[in-house]
Length: 149
Image (cartoon, rainbow, N blue to C red; front, side, top):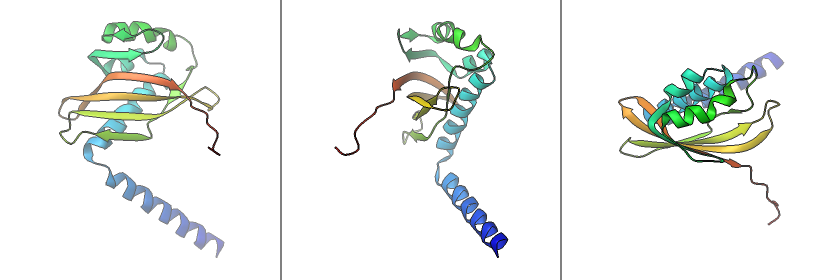
């Protein structure tokens, strides 16, 4: 009986997951995939793959504002020089304009131990059908608040 209950629970979970994925538009799925591939470039220590996700006009906000693909790559190069990634990120939300031209992705940024240290927001532009590139990116410190207020 325990095995039967476990199987039913797993099938229910899988069906809910599939339904949630199907509820996303094709464009949302594309941006989720692009953001995940973008994040994988950090995990894989692949600066070239990182660069391929950037629009030529990309602007990244940080200690300094980096304008243009070359400036962003130069500014992020140090993050790719060590064997271990200094952080990781993953999208938890993607919204796309009705006209399909722009999308916003956001989610947590984690340190190597998995602790959430920041959140990110990236604006993606569809530069060709199905091809999304980052045009704006900004990370922000995690907000801590008193849940009683």
